[in-house]
Amino acid sequence: MNPFQSLRDYEAYVYTLQQQFSAVQRSTLVLIRRGKRTAILHGEIAFAKGYRISLKERLSFDDGPVVIEDYGYELWRNHEKLAWYDAQPHPNDPALASTFPHHKHIPPDIKHHRILAPNMNFTRPNLPALIQEVEELIRREDETGTPN
Image (cartoon, rainbow, N blue to C red; front, side, top):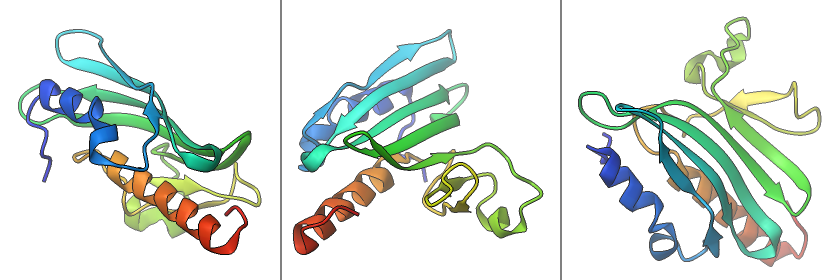
């Protein structure tokens, strides 16, 4: 279920991420209306140890809740891209069918190595899952002393 019944709800959520998630050190996210029924969210969310999420969402809010029409999320540690999520369809890849079109690109061949992305969705916010993923990366680094 989507908790954001209006763009104003989603905007309030985005602009209070630091209060909701203690791991968020800063956010440059900006939500910009692009007409009567669409908006773009873009910017970065920064965390400890050089981790960050760079993102862009295209949103619509026609009748009812906010819907993510398209997105791109990149996970970084300093200058190293760790992974990215997108919804570019790959209908000829049966391994991705169960979360179609949502998937995650990971090393070693980050452009072509895709895995399922069950936490991504068009009808509920993706940011909590992304933030939790970064929190887990930081936790593992704290435990092992090495990134990733």
